[in-house]
Amino acid sequence: MQERPVHKFLEMICRGIDALNTMLGRGVAWLTVGVVLVVFINVLMRYMFHLSFVFMQELEWHLFAAIFLLGGGYTLCKDGHVRVDIFYQRLSPRGRAWLNLCGVLFFLLPGCYLVVTTSLPFVHSSFQMQEGSPDPGGIPLRFLLKAMIPLGFLLIALQGIAVGLRSLLTIAEGKNEE
Image 1: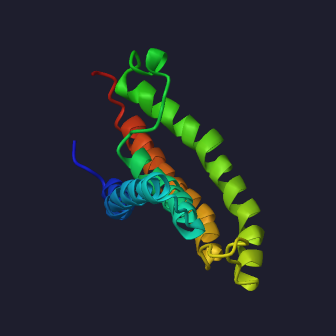
Image 2: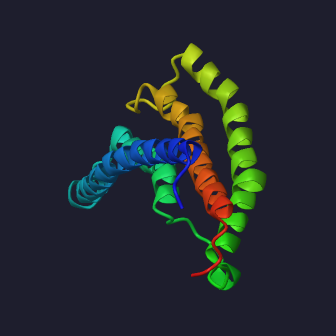
């Protein structure tokens, strides 16, 4: 069966979204090395030298938040999110596609929309006041971290669109065999 131009176009969109989240995911993976180093240095400083720095403690939280928020789309791209596979694994590819499409349309996209729309005023306010750490010696530019909230959920929503489009393509093909 020859692929129609619409199918090729939709698959091209999916590949573009995958490429974006894969590129960001690989970049974010390097932040995990940073978290490990910062935690190691914090522990070393605290127990060997009895020193603690607010900046370093906050850096742990900020790096972890960036990993979590910016890595969500990549995790979805690689099918790494938690799922109850009791029923899913027994379904045909077309049945899985229907379940994925319903999950994207009724749960993932509305959830992402809710987080993005409710976080934007919060982020806007933080940007306006150029919010930084309230603690002396803390990290300035906290508003940049807060901006990752809508960005991260936008990346998840984009990847959800790719999952939904691929599910539609699978459903449209009409294949039911394994």
